[in-house]
Amino acid sequence: MDKAELTIIGGGAAGLMAAIWAARTNADRRIVVLDGAARLGAKILIAGGGRCNVTHYQVAADDFCGGSRNAIKKVLARFPADATVALFAELGVRLKREETGKLFPTTDRAQTVLDALINEARRLGVSILTKRRVTRLARLEDEALAVSGEWGEIVSPHVILATGGKSVPKTGSDGFGWELAKRLGHTLTPRIFPALVPLVAADDWRPKELSGVSLPAELSVHSGTGKRLTAASGDLLFTHRGLSGPVVLDISRHYLNALEDDAAAQLRANWIPEEKSEELDAQLQSLGAAVVRKFLREKLPGRLADLLLELAEIDFERTGDQLDRAARQRLVRLTTAMETPIVGNRGFAVSEATAGGVPLDQIQLKTMESRLCPGLFLCGEICDVDGRIGGFNFQWAWSSGYIAGVSA
Image (cartoon, rainbow, N blue to C red; front, top):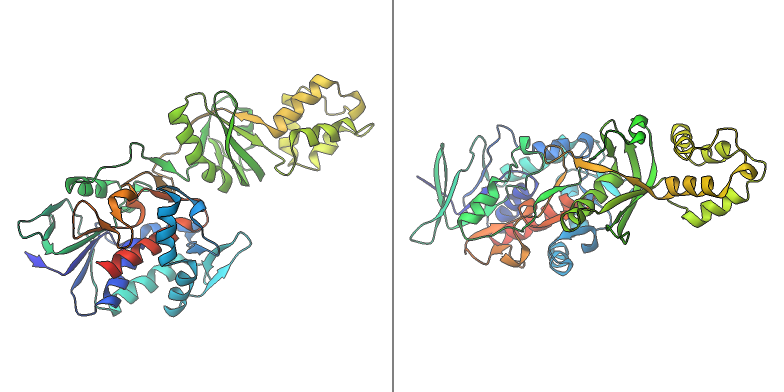
């Protein structure tokens, strides 16, 4: 049996952040990070297309779902995006802001971010042990916590669970951390599902023919009665399975959540997000002798414009003054409020985040310590918090990891 003052289960973004700040807070303690993988940080390395979107220049509680906005706000305030930028600068990683507001390392290499975290943890004397999958976490009679697996056992007065959710389980975050939390009294949210995930459309949905075409779009979620529930705008990519791209990932958790409440919930697309139905209708009515196809192709990728005309049963040569009311309304509806028959999603295997987890009301937010098991701390994606695309989930990992580290 081994002993440590603090054992951190999970060596991803939140776990490494917690390790660094725990060691900075108390340099004399033995701190051990256990990770089941052979190499740390697989999720960091694949993030942002291998560039790692470290955070966003502007982060607010409204960028997140799951726990209450007020609770999330408290955690973010303790270690905001500015603090993240400052920390990485201190570690030799300069960040650059892109047009979208996302912050990436100037090297455009995720490895730069991972190396900085691991090197700092090791510099501070943290023991990082790989191939140490934890299968048991138990409370001992003396109130200490025993962490064990096939590799052996470590006993600590304090343990941080930073095992992630279920997204991209091949990186190690397969949801088992939740089982460890449950064994110590925690419960999980009733719903746990993929967030930031591409969507799969019905086989006969014609826009799937446009695989590879991308454009700005607005996607909106509607109840079965037609009530608009929420919307998101951004770049969209047609795929041979259905839809992907930033706006699809952002809207996916809202659509999947709505579907749980209402099996008839719908996803609708506006292919010209800056225009409403009435505006497009008015423009079509004022076209006169101009060809409708030319007008539409100036606003949309050619292949999409042609498909919309075909679906609206409008000849390619037809002019504005030849457009009857019924055909015009069909085209307006298909262009600004097309129903997208979604039949599924790509699942946890490719989702970038997890919706659901350990509810925040089971955690003391000033410390990230469990309210149900003293000495146990939780941070990162194991918690019921998921952010929109753009570095927000990493910021939650940095913020919650910081608090857990300095507190544990």
